[in-house]
Length: 86
Image 1 (cartoon, rainbow, N blue to C red):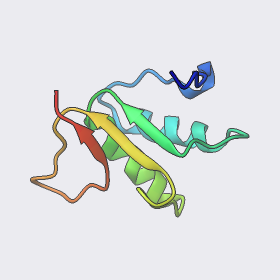
Image 2 (image 1 turned 90 degrees about the vertical axis):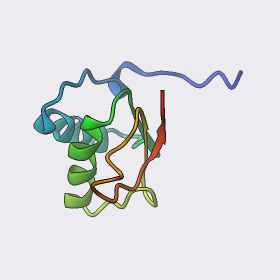
Image 3 (image 1 turned 180 degrees about the vertical axis):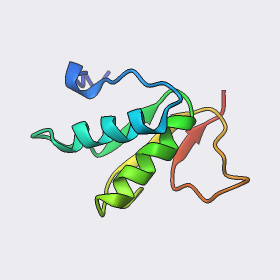
């Protein structure tokens, strides 16, 4: 519909390791065109991504929006993200 491109440098395979999600965010922040949103297919990588953004002085959702599939950990922490429960 909107014909937005999906560039390979925007896509990172993630596991449950927080360090991998932190490293992926650091790579995204080094791109010439920094995204205004990050989408993950499950909630665990969001924790590492939010930590990495905070350490860089980047505020979610003000500077970069975080979006994930699945139920977030909002009952145990206050995460600034948008989620879509499957």
